[in-house]
Image (cartoon, rainbow, N blue to C red):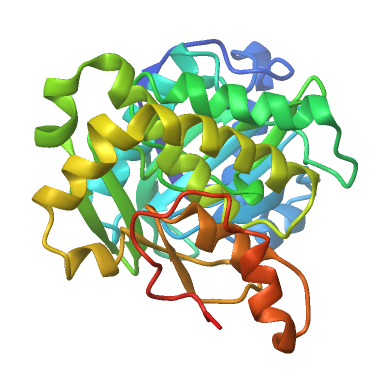
Length: 325
């Protein structure tokens, strides 16, 4: 394209960009970055008029960002300046923290994009490894990979948005992505451009690393269950939640009930929203019985029978959002 349509100013580059050598012997990867930004800024038609074949496409869109890919190895996550400053900061910093653990896409760098012709855009560009779609097939090993990632991430914080749309594959193995809401001490639920959150630092920090890690893992897996239908993955995650409950009930769950206002325990984020069709709209974190009941199949007239089949699971607080018999 003739003229300057946009600029990219790097804030930091951590790894060489993947891809072919740039024009006139420039650094590798610049062509892929350029093509991804041409698509992102919606100026493909101007490039094509100049005879350029743009090889890039949009990969997805989340609450705060859009993601574009160019070539087999590079993706660019764009966050508009209209988003709050914490969104830009979290997208970069949290992705780097996960990268250091070997979770999610490798981070190549980040910078600022400013469009000067053909439209108006200014924002943050996070340059990351392009991963493969999850696909339709699912194995027991895939379930264990997701559980392993959640457990490993719990050493540094809550992911706060674990769901299958936030899982991609590297080398065939599932791995978590999208760490925008990750937090060391807070459970967060995104609402428009803000969050509903609860800070657990005062409760968890005195208990030490082990209980803190287990509670983070429990919360993220609980959120995951409410995005899943009943099936192999759900049952495996529920099994792990039961194991974690036995470790957390005394040191964490019961003190939580004693220190948090009872009315707050019936609201978000303690009542976790269901994001798959269930017998309810939300399930309390302290109610594994309600979690299974909400997932159980059967006609409405079978509710009492279904409830009896969930009675073996623990329940410290009856869920406010479950359609009980």
